[in-house]
Image (cartoon, rainbow, N blue to C red; front, top):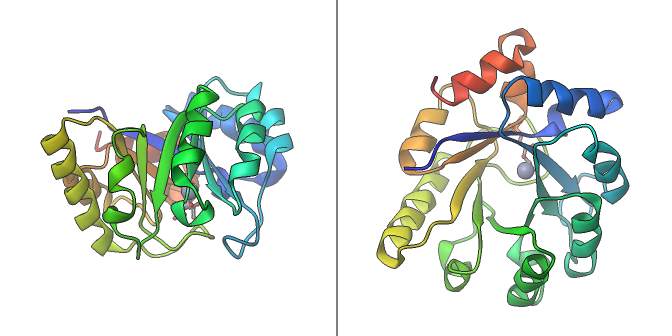
Length: 219
Ligand code: DX5
Ligand code: ZN
C-alpha cells in the first residue's frame, strides 16, 4: 500500500509571490509541487512556462510535478526537463506519437506521467502502463482551478488498480481537480495515492495550508 502524497497545485497560489508560496507549501508538509502549465491552445487558459519553473527551482527542494496541458507537447519536453521538472505529465491527445514522447521524457531521466481527461478511457493508454511512472486522472476538465469534482472518473482508478494487480505494475495514480475534504477519502479508497489540490489547500480553513494538507491525507 503506497503512502498517500499531496501535490498542491500552484494554480491557486498567489502568482505574485510564487517563490514564497512554494516555500510555504514545503514547510507545510507538501510532498511535491503540482505545476499546471497551460498554453491557451490545448486548454482555454494560459499560465507559466520554463523560465518561471527555472526561477522557482532554487526556492524548493520538493519534486516539481509538472502537468503539461500544452499541444503540441513533443518539442517542448526538453525545455521543461532543463527548467527543473522532476515528473513530466503529458496528455495523449497532445502528441501524435505517445510512445516517442514517453521515451523522450525517460531519456531525459525524468519520471513520466500520462493524463486522462474525464471523457478519456483507460484503453487509450493501456499499452503504455508498463512504461510510465504515473497516471494522472483528471476529475475536472483541464484549464481552471475551483471546478466541481466529477465522481465518475473514480471507476477509471478502480480499473487501473485491477490492471496493476493483474500485470504486477507499480505506477502512481494521481487524481487532479475538485479534490476537497468531502471527496478525498473516496478518491483514496478507489486507489489514488497522490492527490492534487489547489483551491482546497489554499482557500480551505482560512488558508491554513498545513491543516489542509494533513486533512487531505486523512490525518
Ligand atoms: C486543472 C488543473 C488542476 C487544478 C486543480 O486544469 O490541472 O491541477 O488546478 O485545482 P483545484 O484543486 O482547485 O480543482
Ligand atoms: Zn493539474
